[in-house]
Length: 109
Image (cartoon, rainbow, N blue to C red):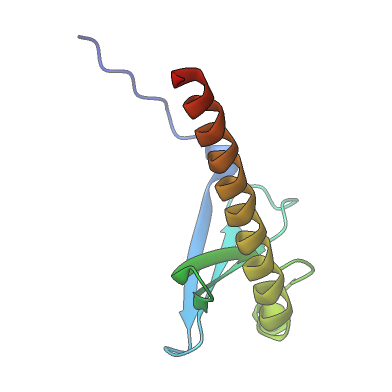
């Protein structure tokens, strides 16, 4: 068996810095290394207690952040949006599974 391994794409190299307050969440800063035209990107991550779902780790992009300070300022708004999106995706998936379950039970009868 031949092992396939793709080379590193130098144009996409980035350094990831992780920041946390140890309580409310984490911000990851992705800093392009060789492509000075690519902007830094900031991601947030929280562990949220979601009603009827329990604890969920939710990641989200902090849109509009251009530095760590603006990422901190945008963390709560982006986090709320990310949590709401995760809940909606979960509801959609549950509905899809319910529909598939009904269709499968009809096929069995």
